[in-house]
Amino acid sequence: MTKDTRFVGLDVHAETISVAVAEAGRDGEVRSLGHVPNTAEAIRKLMARLGKAEQLRVCYEAGPCGYVVYWQLAELGVACEVVAPSLIPVKSGDRVKTDRKDAEKLARCYRAGDLTPVWVPDAAHEALRDLVRGREAAQRDLFRARQRVLKLLLRHGRRSPEGGKNWTKAHFEWLGRQRFEEAPLEAIFADYLNEVRHALERVARLDRAIDEAVESAPERTRAVVAALQALRGVAKTTAVTVAVEVGSFSRFERARQLMAYSGAVPSERSTGGPGKARRGSITKTGNGHLRRILTEAAWHYRHPPRVSHALRARQREQGEQVKEISWKAQVRLSSRFRRLLGRGKPPQKAVTAVARELLGFMWAIGREAEARYLKPAKVAA
Image 1 (cartoon, one colour):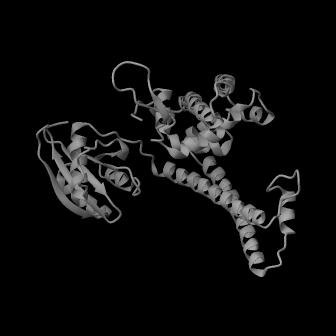
Image 2 (tube, one colour):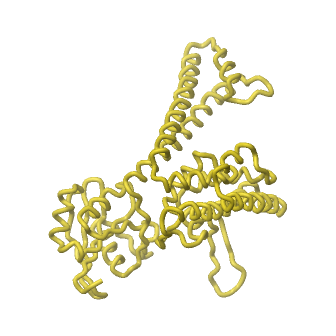
Image 3 (cartoon, helix red, strand yellow):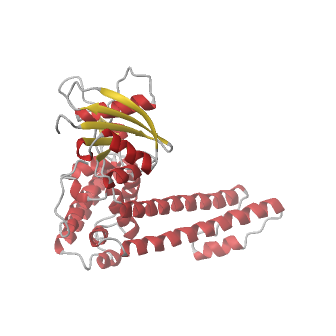
């Protein structure tokens, strides 16, 4: 940083961007420059008006507008960082919030070094992540559609044959034989059942799209996805979700940083002098998509350690170190789950603790896979 450096804060919205500039130096002036349209041409003119690209340091909050502004500034050669909104300092007595004040605060805090940048994916990685999240949304819609069918039948005393599982081929055949005397009820049941079939087709279609996208992904991404599947409870969909949500395992120097990124670490309030630490529920201040898929995978560790035929097939092309980490994860996490239950912990809390530690084993495997393709980078989480 030089005395000519300018720190620019952008409050980005769909149609407009509020701009503020903080001059270099602790006592440098912080002033608002008003609003500009959120277009590539307006951003280019703004940067040209502010000075040379090498003198500018720009930041804005991560939000619904994505990383388009970041990519535009990168093309212009301007240094830009996207910062975590939840980690921006807030004054408890400040009750006035405007676009102008937000931009000024960003510029001032950025100059002081009080902002935490987030990792920004490239366009290809962002596209794959959107696809995976779209599949997650489709799976939620399928769950809701199935629930509508079952609850409708339950309200009218219709239950599937005893001993049969829901949503198998036999269950669908039984559903197809259901008839109602009332025409309105017959119409809504047919509509609900048709929605389930459409949701199933949608999930299957997105699964095929994910398979095709992974096959065309960079070799490093394919290696990470394959290596993660060496873990119990981590099939292809789970592995792809973890890989795209984490982005790069090498940007985390320690496993605990990745655990904090997921929001699966316990909160703590131990003020008031030395003494016993007082911890509460998990913070949930992290990646919710990653946390959800981890919890699903962690339920597999309630069973004793074993290598099934499916798991052995997924491990076939992996090295001995990855297999060793996978087995170590099974032994430790299965034991931890039973130990927590023995202490009287509810299964939901036990599986959350197991999910947090499972992410640590994923970190070890992910870094091992990435080490073959790039030098580990030390980037703030």
